[in-house]
Length: 251
Image (cartoon, rainbow, N blue to C red; front, side, top):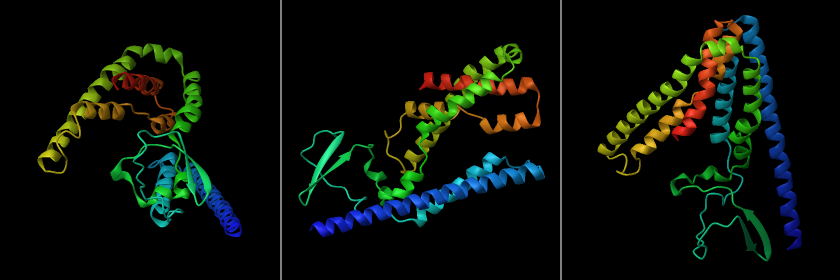
């Protein structure tokens, strides 16, 4: 029994090292490919597609390959076990399997129809970028640098237009998108593709507020390279910074 457990632990360690090597290879390949694409676009003045768009296309293709070409590492990952004695979800759970106690931590709640065979795909989970890292680590320095290097004179000269686009424009966009979504929801209910009551009008407005908070990072980068009118750049940047706060209030 001990020999079998030792063999399983060595096998798990080998699989862990193999997965780490594959992940590093994929990351380095995407990084080199993105750098070569940026160099190609800069030298040939290719303006039909920005380099950030090319990086997104590479990430999309690699995500599709990892999603459909890799198998889950745990065959029991998609199996749901009924724990009828539990009335709440504990933060940690101790499970005894063949006189060996294992500790499992709470990760997230998933609905019944979202359980899929790729639930235990370790490579796919590690390759998925955490949005909290982007919003809490990467995005603040970008916004700080853009705001610090912004020409204050152009910003305050266009303050009225910026506030109009940020507050009134975001509110109008939220209502329009919410009404369109509500119309599609009613059409799906009429076509028996959706149950009545699954989506309410407030849910549609919530989706509209999320879609109204645009972040034109790529557009601002293109404007910076093309040296467009400073008033246009300031107007777009100011609106993109303030509409996030408006969207948070609307939600």
